[in-house]
Length: 278
Ligand SMILES: [Zn+2]
Image 1 (cartoon, rainbow, N blue to C red):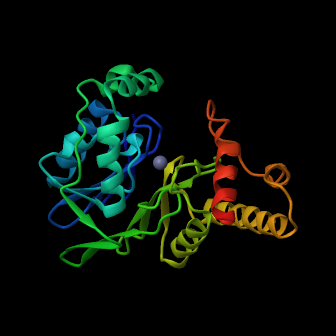
Image 2: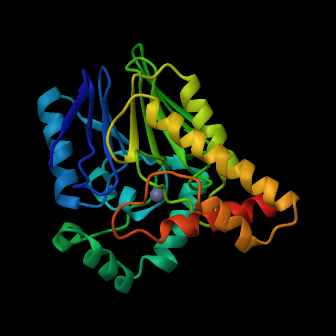
């Protein structure tokens, strides 16, 4: 694991060791963490390291969305306020009851680089929720969590205008084909979210997966997404079948999904098509 100091008062892990990326915003009197990855011992180390280096304490964990690789480290922040959107909270309750069974956790472990990274996993839910927006103000520093939808209906970004850093969660897969297949994924909301990110004063974008960047990968992804949507709309208007439409959409060039997730592309295009025809 390598802890990156993105800039003064902002830290992140984006090397894949925690699977989903994680971030810490150091405010004047407290530390706000964003997402908790899926490697419990590393998240514990990350928290300890930032607390030690800054002499401040974690107070809040913000969660961008409900997927296991972004929330399985929540137990490290049990003493903090854990905050997420209502949609994400509802999805986590359902997953806790139905999807994250002992058997499925075993599957997650098998797919993790280090299966012991999920030993003692405890699903910890949010302690506070917001509908669309939540703001933390500490002295003259502000951290804003805002729900946009896109990757999932609850997907929210976390932005600090003072530090000019935006954590995008899984609305951004830097230079990788994104996972757009969740049941509540929505390409139209995704476009609006990307445009919103680009309208803000940001120096560093932190994706849910991949490296920290400037705005270039966002523009590339927005361009791709808009091309797919307009092609699909044309095909639908021309009375083409789903099969024909997907075949054309597959030809639009973009980065491949990460290794082992090749099926993401067609599943994502199918989901987007489904949303556009519903
Ligand atoms: Zn996700």
